[in-house]
Length: 308
Image (cartoon, rainbow, N blue to C red):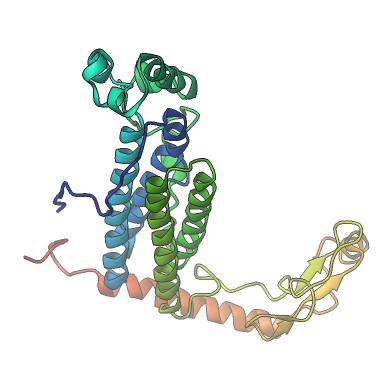
């Protein structure tokens, strides 16, 4: 159950109309890294988490709801940046608020022209308001939402989503000198960092959480890293210990020769038979654990989502 409070979570303000920046800000309204995408992603992921991880369900729903409130902040800011674009203000002539804030009719008309240049949809299609489209006018798409049904995978996805959203807000700050908008964007950007740390903590609280999914890595193919370009750089990603796995990377200098010698990885010098046997046993055990985790959490008899 949602209850809308008309006061914004953050007191969004703008000092003057700016249709061009309003258009850029649409990225965080209807873009792939925007607030609507984040809200729908966490809202969708929460359903699968409800039974096995009710605490994470609560977290996801809380953050999803906050993202909807951020969407409202972004939408309100866009609307304020478009003052003077709507027909009502356009017809108000000298008495309108926009005329008080600006220097005459010519300046007012330049704002309207800027709105048309930045995004014709503002005055033509939407009548001077935001819709779920990005800055190029491309409609919001459900493919922006990632929900994989495995909470550890979803949480890792969310870490990346929050990182991208933070970066977009950083970039947006470069395109406006309005101090009020900077305050709003700083608030929204900082909340992305908070959500990142919440998702990180939630992931750490699920053990084991690696590798993602159920099946363990095939020991025959885990350690090899291939030199697939001239002058490949060496570093902790292709030499030394594989972090947290008790194994070392094996650097294959000549992958073509290795593929021919092993007949496409089918005849390896070490068949890892003991490790494979252990891995298969581990996979069966983990499959039972993961399946039971969900089955045992589901209520018996009549399914009921809420308890009143």
